[in-house]
Length: 205
Length: 348
Image (cartoon, rainbow over all chains, first blue to last red; front, side, top):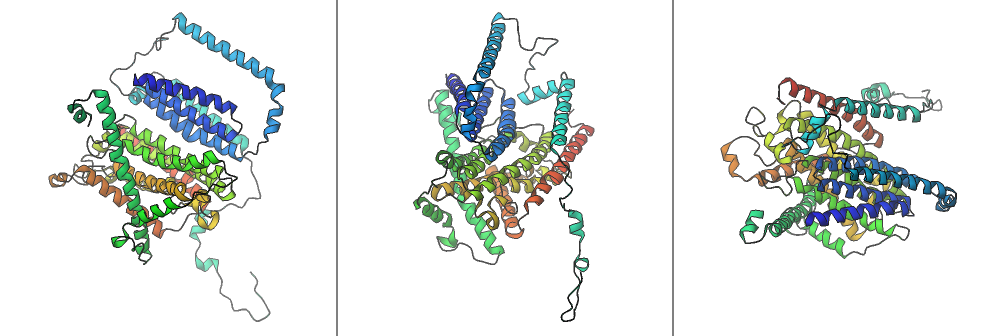
């Protein structure tokens, strides 16, 4: 009973906030609705007993990715009339994309209904590990059976990160950086001089 | 507590609901009272370190000062700037305050006295504390004003930077304890140091982690010396500039609630939580929650002490400390800790 109420609450809110993300006029509001959608998706994960995934969803998407989204969107100065001007022109393309997504969704549902799939049986698979907590079970799988895939994903992410840094980094010669250890090592004796200049002569530094 | 209500003849569902609500009240109300008291303590500590008297008029030793301030703020007019984004402007302080209370659900107050004894307790705390930035960012943006906006930018960069190193520090603790559950983490500290000292802090590998956790938690809660989001010499009052009345008070309470939470986390992860500091039978006569409160109070004193004595960091120094020092060092310690644990057969 309470599971059903919770499920329908989370599911409705996910769909609703997903829709408002697209429909909201203000991009900052869009991002905030997106965050609500992430949050409710995490709630759904908890309902199926995947608490580890749910927490990671909140930490990674809500805590890091969405903050960066918000950061960027807040700093953009967006002209709404200009955005809406392209609406008619891009409408057929958007419609086509929507049809492709719908077709894929229907295919997925059809394949599921056909009953050919059973979770975790494809290619030497994994029976669910009994008596382990969520976190331990995922760890045991990632670091044994799927070690290669896991490490490969890690390498891909690392390469992507380095690529992004290389692409956006530009060397500027005119920036004066600080050498912190040199600053800290500086003593008053080498930083100051004590002079008694003659009147009208001034000081050469 | 569920069993107690079931004993009164209630069905399980109702008993569970009532006991959970009672648990929430039993945690939230003392936390709010504690927030009011630590604001007073903070001002007193700060004052005595500056050779001043601090609040000393309302009540004996000025102990009721926070309540007088609360009443004053409650009676003030709420001013909403006409250019502000009204809905978000009002939601922001509520988010900050709620998030500060939410994370207390997984803090164990005694063996078994924990509201939500979940497997992923520490991850839950990380998730909730990563929400804290939204209150500030939304406040800064919706105020539609320069200084709050700068402050929001600073806050989001600062909190993301230090969350990374906090994550690695927590991984060291989790590796040693073998669990994300805070109750299990406390139990793993039982007799940790030579079978006598309760607490992870006495390990040479985890003591530097404790120091880094303390500093990172100051940065995470935007306390001095890292209070750049409300640096009054640069940003007026930061993200709170446009706020008045109860909205301002909610920010204030949320901020101190977060500081207390970080102190509680500090006590739970490194100082043995509800366990007495050392293994002596006589110390177990004192209930666990008193030990926890004493450890939280000590942690808070350190926070006040630092606030009273350390000058504010420059923003580039803050970023340098986070990314160039804490991140590599904490990563190094993840390697050292896991290597040590593997070598000593901890996981066998």
